[in-house]
Image (tube, rainbow, N blue to C red; front, side, top):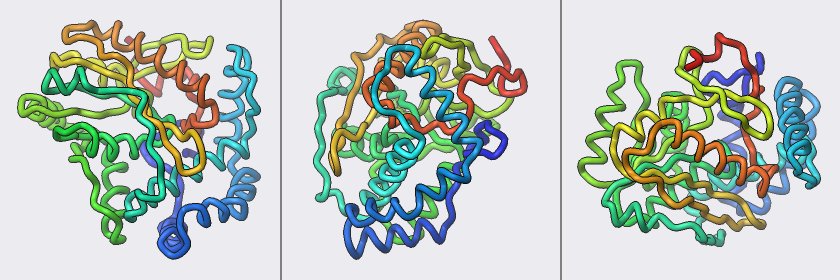
Amino acid sequence: MSADNRWKGTSRGTPLGYRFFILTIRALGPRAAHALLWFVVPWYALTARASNKAIRSYFQRLRASGQASRLTVLGSYMTFGRSLIDRAAMRAGRASDYTWLKPGTLQPLKDAGAGVVISAHVGNWELAGNLLGHQAGMPVHVLMYDAEVQAIARAQEQGQERRTFNVIAIKDDFSHVYAAAEAMRAGGLLCLHGDRFLPGARTVLKSFLGHDARFPVGPFALARSLQVPVSYAFVVNTAPLCYSFHATPPLPPGSTVEALIDAYVKALEDVTHKYPLQWFNYYDFWRHDPALGQRT
């Protein structure tokens, strides 16, 4: 989350806080760590003004588009806190505490021998990478910004479980594009996000929840250039310690960038309507400041 209400590639949190929750998970389990959120989240909800404003803006758009569920800032932060705890618990080797439901399928991508999976900061996106690593039966590569790569490295240094996917860091020299192409030639899945971008990135305006929002062009242009099927996947929490994997039917190789983005926005709207409290973009997603991106 960011103090000036735009995303900069990092999220708030302290190493001491992470270590405390990791120790709780190891000693007492994830349910006990979930309970501790009631001592942390209310204070955060009182002080996080920028993210409070952003999440209320998201709620207003959901209601305007027909979403009638109970939506509160506290509920959003509690859901996010549980997702962070569950992510840490999986890294710490507590996978047996969880139940997995898999209504989605990536079999067409497996049959093709390679494919791109685009997700979003909805549900538990890192669990998606770990789950795919177990389910896919083929190498899984996750494209991430440097700040996200460093966060995973810190988690490993704290003695948590080794991840089941390979990380490709996004670099200014575009070396990640060549790494992604090589991964596809070798056969595997490339996973990345399609809902965030850093200032200066190429973007396009699309109607999302009834209002124009900027989406990055890069992930979809990369997916098209790789000439492999593209699917949109999300891992969402459906009950305490229970997650469900959802994947859309893949779009064929050669689909246009515009078609890929349009299908992605539709999939993102569908998942936010079904799981409204699992939207974890705590900045003004609909902000149209030109400094945030180069419109195409």
